View 1: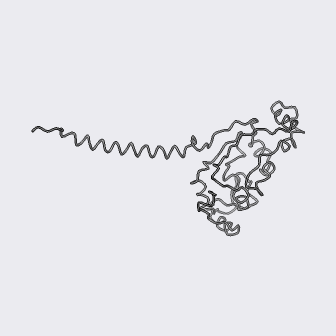
View 2 (view 1 turned 90 degrees about the horizontal axis):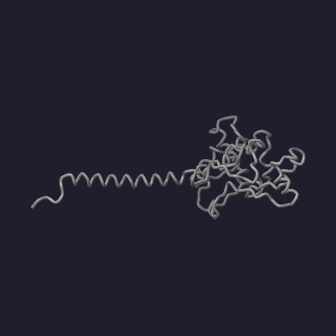
View 3 (view 1 turned 90 degrees about the vertical axis):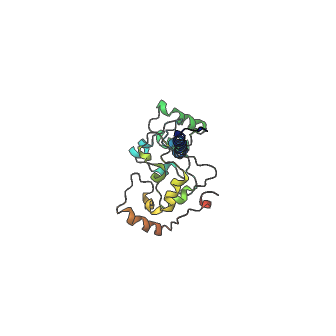
Length: 216
């Protein structure tokens, strides 16, 4: 009886198995890469706002402290969007006829808030408290990036759980003195390896990694 399969059939079968495994592995790696990509996380994407407020100008150029506008970050779980009155504290005196700022003046006249587009938007099942992070010495820059260098505004970090856990597992790598929380481009006077553990002890920082810490 003649052979049904040629001798090369074994080689073809082995090649098909290897190729199939490579395709599955490649697809898995591709999915992992996609889930970490800016396309999915929304990182590094400039958000068009009703007025393109420049943090680079106000923070980097003029040196305005983050807390002048975001007044609730030290006492509240959220960072407030400043009311139009905050803008007008300066712009009732400078650039008072600029067409670019007419929406701000109109908002102040009518009492209707500007419709800012949210940039850092965590899922509803994630609890985040701004005030506790500020009190524990986590800088604005650690989460929001170099705001002082952003002409527009964008999400600088992935905001994924693994990114949060990177800090929660080793807070000594990121903590800074409380008085330097809003400092952009902060560099410790001594090495972070020396300063970090001391601040973790002084500020009673716990390495909270249980699910209930953020998922409440």
